[in-house]
Image 1 (cartoon, helix red, strand yellow):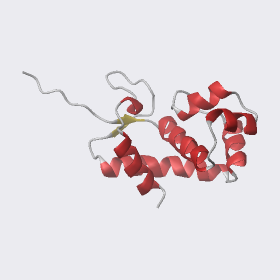
Image 2 (cartoon, one colour; image 1 turned 135 degrees about the horizontal axis):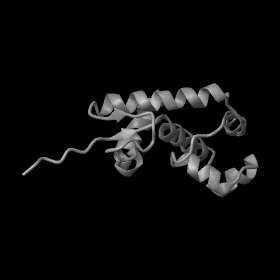
Image 3 (tube, helix red, strand yellow; image 1 turned 90 degrees about the vertical axis):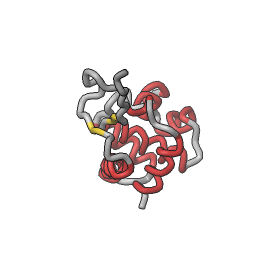
Image 4 (cartoon, helix red, strand yellow; image 1 turned 180 degrees about the horizontal axis):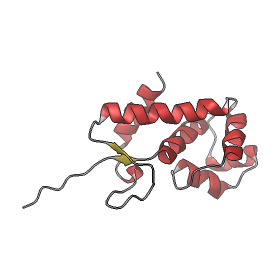
Length: 124
């Protein structure tokens, strides 16, 4: 019997999406409320938060303005999440392309406990 190995896979896009979701939640806003506030499409916001699309520079600036932070802070937050995930699970791998052959997006494997730990570590 072959041992099945599962890896936590993630991309910059997925980590950026986590930061966006956490920032929105810190404002106690639903996706719909935040999308209306920011003047962006709800589906676009959802796809960004789930790591399904990489936002444009313009969209990053819109998000940052509505969070009241610099756009570089959102990008740095995504880098901190990447680092925290790797520190918590050394088997985790980073891949630059979302659907690299043979791996599944990290969002499919993340457990809430791991996300909570990553968030706490990344926000330090």
